[in-house]
Length: 195
Figure 1 (cartoon, rainbow, N blue to C red):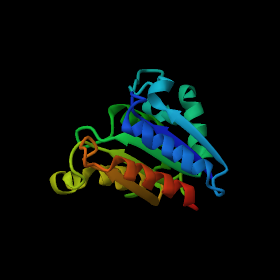
Figure 2: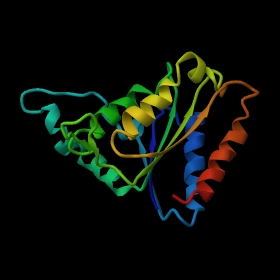
Figure 3: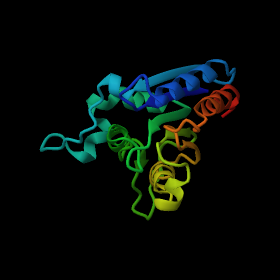
Figure 4: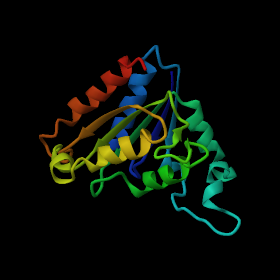
């Protein structure tokens, strides 16, 4: 199993970075995972801004040569892991800019003229690891689960990825947030996951 980890946080002293380290550690000890690659969007200097003009059209984004290396990473991966904080009830703008550009028509899905497209990323699985300052049930009760609906239904299911797992950790700035226990949960999951 080939695993691509997409890390989105500007601070390498953050809890998100600690989660990234546990994903890498657990994956390296898992005999089912034979290769791991990490894409750190901030360190990479990924440009999240969509730019279109006469010679750079949205309908051609699936073939944009500036994004070719990122398309190859997604094609290569069997499992895609996203590690990010929840800010204002959603992933950071950097990650959303990556999603806007990478999950483009012609690469991630193909319109068929019907209600739903043909998802072109079938057979892959996704894990989303997110943390937030607020309580863990805040997104469910106050935001109608908008984060999970956005990621699972509006994005991953749309492009053909049906196996999506969430680790959504709340109260992460509280002394009672059990951060170490949650880090170990991530390590244990990636040490034993088999698909």
